[in-house]
Length: 115
Image 1 (spheres, rainbow, N blue to C red):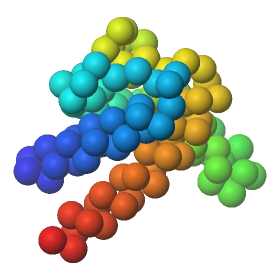
Image 2 (cartoon, rainbow, N blue to C red; image 1 turned 90 degrees about the vertical axis):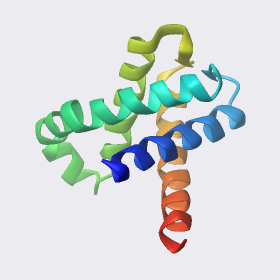
Image 3 (cartoon, rainbow, N blue to C red; image 1 turned 45 degrees about the vertical axis):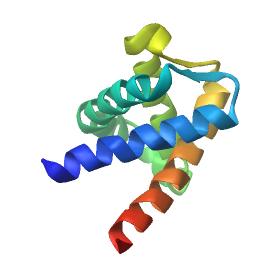
Image 4 (tube, rainbow, N blue to C red; image 1 turned 30 degrees about the vertical axis):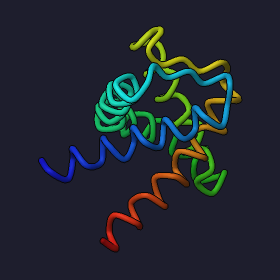
């Protein structure tokens, strides 16, 4: 449970960092980022595995790069669920945000792991 809560907080910080970098990603403060991270974690646990299985051939052909498209889809689903608390301007921005969120998550998890 503690690990899951830490993961949600790390995702919230990553969402805030990415929203600072792009004007087309809007987050209503840290509370909005926490809600978005919580919804994103739920979607990643429930919807993402289904999407990965359904798109396995194209994921293999793209050497795994299609997973960023799946991550962008989950970000857009989070946008649709949260409404004005979390908004992404377009699908292209969602793909770039998915890549940057993965990088920021990697860095933050490495920093937390070292502490």
